Image (cartoon, rainbow, N blue to C red; front, side):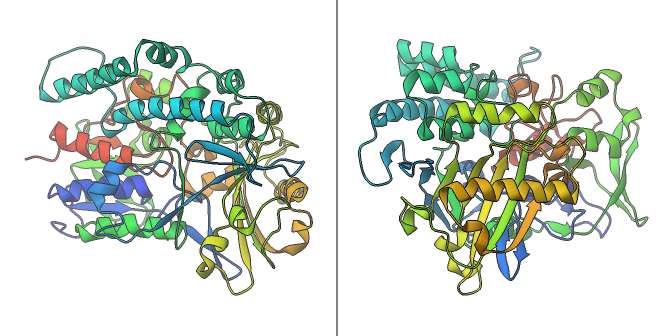
Amino acid sequence: MAMSDNRYDAIVIGAGHNGLTAAATLAAAGKSVCVLERSDRIGGMSRSVDLGGATAPEIAHLLYNLNPTVVRDLGLGTKVPLVTKILPTVCLSPDRNHVLFAQGEATFANGAVHPDAAAFGLLHGRLTRFAALLGQMADGPPPALAGGVLDAGTLKEMAALGKLGWGLKRLGKTEMREFLRVILSNAYDLILDEISDGPLAGALAADAVRGAHAGPRSPGTVFSLMYRLGNGGEAHLPIGGMGAVAAAFETAARNRGVAIRTGVRIDHIIVAADRVQGVLLEDGTTIHADAILSSAGPAQTMQIAGVANFDIEAVRRVRNLRHKGTVAKINLLLDAAPVFPGLTREQTAGRLIVAPSATYVERAFNPAKYGEMSQDLVIEAVHPSLSDPSLTPPGLHLMSAVVSYAPFALTGGWTDAARAELLARTVRTLDIFAPGIGGSIRESQVLSPADIADLTGAPGGHWHHVEMGIDQILTVRPANLISRYAFGIGGLYLCGASAHPGGDVMGAAGRNAALQTLKDGVLGA
């Protein structure tokens, strides 16, 4: 509980899943914590919105990488209700010979054997094993490689590196060499070295670059594909909508005594003697705390803390961070369940991927490089109401689509006309696979990357806050010398998607930042 209405041990900025995880972790250690959220709702990118009486996923619509340690620590699904359903992936093909894969096994949707089934199984299995090794590094800060005094914490981190090395050795010499060969390479070459180009390869390529300002031929996209596969790679649909996920994190935090205030805007972080003292709200209220954990982006955090309080090199590095969002979100309320020829109703309820080939995905990225909207969109679509009818009024159905490539800095800007054009291109693309779907649209919602930035504060509308490039991951995430959560000023920490291990609805960054805050002793004994 708080010491008073305006004094806490720690303040967390942002009530997304990372901010709530950080708050709950600190509260479990006996600290008083207040979460401040500028929106009138909690959840960040993992929340629901009303669309014509239906409960639609506003931005994120699936769970891939919910961290198992966070799930256990917060009691998600046990002490706190959270139910999910695993969805198979359906790789849509213009000739309606669609491909289905789940748990590393690929078949045609009609049950026929896919010619690349064996090769795909080997590739998927290898990448999943590699991803599991990297996943061991998600449950703690990236290792400190600059040397220094060896204490218990440093030894623990070295032990984690040793565990990774031992895991690589256990793979055998051939697999270890393969891991080292591909880890920083591009997904396009890796995929097409193993399987033929087509919908199956296209779906893997799309997964390697979703949310990124990159094409599958960009260096480091194998790492981002492994990141997606870090916890097995299965797509989980939350029953009750993404709002149920946000509610679960909120409940876990409130059960531990965390105070959560929404609709609160911070004027600035109060700094004295190079340490945070609290925050001043726009309404003139002062809230005191010994530590502040921010799930906002590095640049936004730096601005509200005062750029003058940071050294010149840190300011330069933050200003040079790459965070060009390329993903838009479209929700459609339909008069009838969509019909995809070649798919059963059960298959239609899966995760549908529009990426007919890896080459298609690469070409789709080209216009985004120059600030243009792609004509050939890469889409991940789900129909939540087919799995959870409670989300819509009787007879109506939801389609939720994550659409790439729609650049944040669109030439001409994201006007109403630009949003309408993106919707029209999306519907035209979907109509190839579900003829007539445009005629059943009752209501729509279109969120460009610029809209996502306005709604959530995500830098550049980027789903990971900072690009997951090879120069912005692990010990250099978000940038060199600010990769271990502490952010320049004493008592100030980053706990959002820009921090290690990165984005997705995962929670690990929030937990790690909170544990680092406790370890650093800024909150006392």
